Image 1 (cartoon, rainbow, N blue to C red):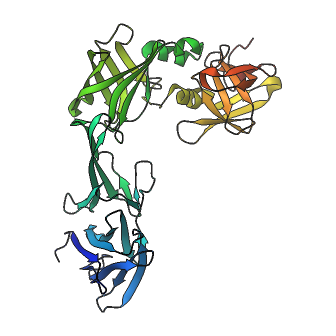
Image 2: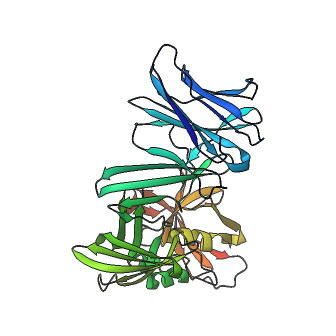
Image 3: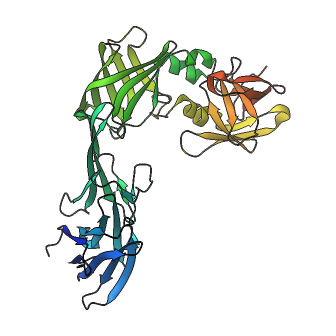
Length: 424
């Protein structure tokens, strides 16, 4: 067999003594070919590997539909000098199961196929939903697993192409090589972040009076590749405005993209400036929509200080860049606050874990620290410049905009340790 090629054999296991699909290929990269076979078995499809002398080296059970009549395909996908992967596809008229395996050190190991969040794809699904194949470009790179489908969604016809690249122990989704189109319009794989007006960001960075920050409009670029949604969504004091994108053109040489969208029958334009690897919107300039919404929007953290750093939301920027510090509390008690996990960040204070809520705090607070665990204490926080804050214990009922809170104790003023500030 030619090195680097893809081999597949299909077999319907319907007669009393069915034949067994078989492939002869170098699976472990040692220069000699092994023989792989797949056959129907109780509870799955049996995958076996034998050496050149026919001696069994490894065996495992691959997922298969629960039926007495199952068809099986066996495919080898080259990895270059590392050998080849094996794909077992077991299917019936009602279901199909796909699994990928690697043979090394006389053992078969499952290679999970993982989405962008690192979650393994389901073993089985409806037949014909996804069309699978392997691609290898250039010829000296490991083969990539590709699946494609076309489906009808509320917005029209959605075409998705997902590419998974070999990463040693898994096949991981590659956003750059994957594509999604709604009615022929490409949906970009951009970092999801909230964007704010420059006036709002200036107020945020002053760490004072965030009520005026919340009164300013916000913008989100909704680029949902799985649901086929591509739109600009504005949050204003008068309600949300959804503006579906009608055209999209990327300008890689300028790290920009140009969008045309429509809202309420009115067409307008937006120019998106991109950072990092071309996947992070760092500024969106709206033109031709309205006096309130025309102009630049940017994510929290962008161009703040000396470095360009982008956060998914203002709450994440506050948690990371303001709250995270050692604070001096009443009677000089040291109160450290730290962020935990990935965005959306949570913060740990007084050994308790909190969620930062800037969306709907009570009128007397700039933000809420909501307990991550049931039964914990809620704090209302007022920012007093870059190096001081006031926290008040609260008793709250309800959620979101319907939340009602009242004081549950005296306010405490905290000062950032190492900073010289006046706290009255």
